[in-house]
Length: 132
Image (cartoon, rainbow, N blue to C red):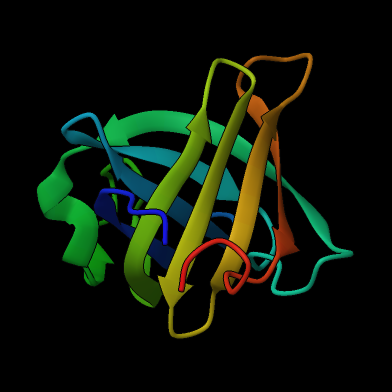
């Protein structure tokens, strides 16, 4: 069995000026964050645009509530899914993780596109063949 350090992730559904999902990975002492205009894929054939946004403080991982009008991201935030993840691969062009959430479970990749803030996120397989 391969052992990987375990980290946390969260997906927050954000009802702001544009409804979207915020995908966040606890990494390097912060929450690396991407805004996904549609629901995070739960099947292998679905790919979604993930726009990298500013890192968030790790304490934000459990945030649910309302961001007041006039503040950045004003609107309602709900936790869509949360759990642990294992980092399998990370470089400038690709991040590969195993998500262990209630809704999102499996091997996921983020691949950087030509515009450095734009990534694709998609499921590449289940976790069984990686972690037992």
